[in-house]
Structures are given as structure tokens and as C-alpha cells.
Image (cartoon, rainbow, N blue to C red; front, side, top):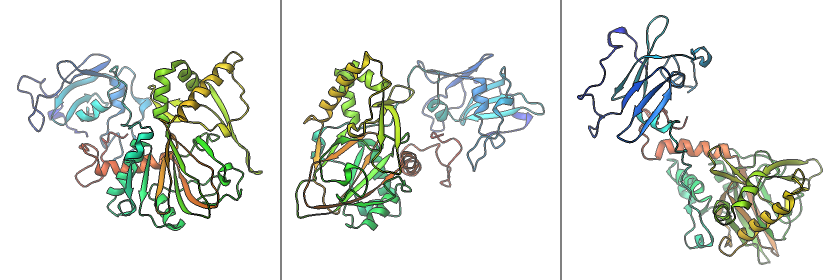
Length: 420
């Protein structure tokens, strides 16, 4: 937000009777500035500091930020590197900064909650979204929602479903009509279906119609899909439509983040190796395609938080690009990883039945199956990680608590959303 006009551009410094928060709960944070940065004292022990250029670059008044497109209008590179504010002031609406300008001073106001959310000067790293790590005991109370909830028009059931996928890495949907049409519509509730060399929406049996062991009846060890893509799918959805004249085919789920936490604590050297050494993967079963990618088994964000697991031993290519001395150590690290994901503590087995689908975070949860006999018909789809996170973020703006700066009174997204 921004105000223009010289009459109120130079307010007096805050005094002992400075304004209080709208709820009157406590005094406002105090602010001060030197030639390089602005200091915010949140309380007696906590403070943040922001460079002048950063603040000016993040002004979201109508002149600097488009309220509809949510895109920056200011030319960042026209901001002088030695810019200094004329004044700073703590107000009930946020930190008010007055900048000098060729014609008239420019006033920026930054909401307190937004500044605190985006503070970059503290030693604390941003905390990832809450994840519930689990092992085999999740069988006692696995996350689940009903098909009716997810398909309701108000979006609340969809929000609950996606939130559980985000928190647990998977979630069942019960009461689903045992048809590919209903399953496809359920998939589209998350986002548009991602088309790959397997097609768009799958409906398949063990007929080797595609060059992949998923199209057989043999057992599949715990793995993630698309290790051979630079951008693996984010969510995959499975629905068993029928299984006749045979047995077996139980579904296996393993929380890769849970196993990674054990590996980090008990075998730090193996964890470090699997986080830094890239492993080649391929998809070569289709004559018209040859996909290849190279990434570590465990991937992290810029703050050291684990963000993805990539593991499919069946798709692993020739081990190359690894130093001679690291080869035995890497094999031992992979052996340790395999022992952990195949342990009784990690494996969650469930026999799917028609009418219950399961959606899996493919960047976190490994899946597999036992061998089977008979005719087993499955359907499902891939949805991109970006589509999943976008839909969840939009629903969070609508339903999550503490959305004070995320939307305007009309329900439209405000410019001070904590999401961007």
C-alpha cells in the first residue's frame, strides 16, 4: 500500500504513546535505520534487518506492483544501490518508509506479518510444511477421505484430501465408483493430468502393452516413479478396478522421508553419500523413447531440508561418473538404504479393493506390490508437483486459518500474500 502527499510525509518519531496493534494487545514493533538497512525490533529479544534496496524492490503499492496480475512493475535495476529512506515509522498498518523521488516522496507500507514471514536476516532457516513421518504402524489409522467430500463443490473436502497427501505423503479416497471415468474425474480435481510415454490416463492389465514391469504380474520392490525424468511427477493416483481369478497383488507403501530420517541419524556417512553422489536412471523399454536423468537418491532444498526421494533400483543405469574410491562406499550406502526400506518397521502393506483409490506423493512415498495371479485391472494418472502445490496453496488461502493478509475482504487474493 502507498500514500502520496507532502502534508503527512514526515511524521514525528514514535514516542511512548505510539499506536498499538489494532487489537490493543501490545505495542508495535519499533523501527530505525542507518545508511544501509532498516532495523525492526519485534520484542525484547527478537529483531530483523532489511536492506534498503530490498525494501524498495518489494514495495507493493499500485505504482510498483500490479494488484491484479500480482507482478512487479518497478524496474529493480533503476533503484540506486546507495538508496536511503527519508524516514521510517511504525504504524498500525505496518512499517512506513518514505523514499526520496525526483518529483514527490514515495511512501511504502509493509505489513508486520509479511515482514516477519519474509525476514532473511535471522539465523533461523524457514521451516518446511509439517510432515507426519510414519512406518508400518500407519496401518492402524491411515489417512483417508470420502469420494463425496472430495467431489463436493465447496472445495473443503478437496482441501482436506490434498492437505493429507501433503502431510502424510499419501491418502486414500473411499466410496469411489469402480470405473475409469470416475477415477479420471477424481484425478482432475487435483490438476490436469500429465501425459507421458505411458499415455495420459492409464487403464491397464499385466499384458506388457508398455515396456515396463508395471505391466506384468511380477512383484515390484518399493520405488518412486520417473527417476529417469528431470521433473518426476508429483502425485500419482491408483485405483484397482477389478482382480478376478487370482490372488496376491497387495500394495506396498514406504515413507521415504521416515527412512531418510533414520538413515541420517544412524548412518550419517551413507546419508551424506546418497545426498551428494548422482545416480543415473533410464527408461528404455519403449522403442520410441529413451529417457535419462542423473540425480542423487536424496535431494534437499537450499536450507538442507529433504525435498525428494528418487529411488528405483530396477531403472538404475550403469553406475558411472562416480570416483573409483567411492564405488564400494556407494554400494554399501545403497545396501543400507535398501535394508531400511524393506524392514518390517518401514513397510505398510494394504490390499486395495475396487472403490478405494490411493494418491501418493511421488517425491516422498515409495510404492510397490506383491506378485499376483489372475486378471488385475488398474487405472490411474500422474499429476505434476507444481499443479498439486498450486491447487493446495489456493485452497489454503480459502480454508486455512490465520489468513489475515492473504485475501481481501472480497475474497480476492491480496498483494501481501505470504505465498509470494
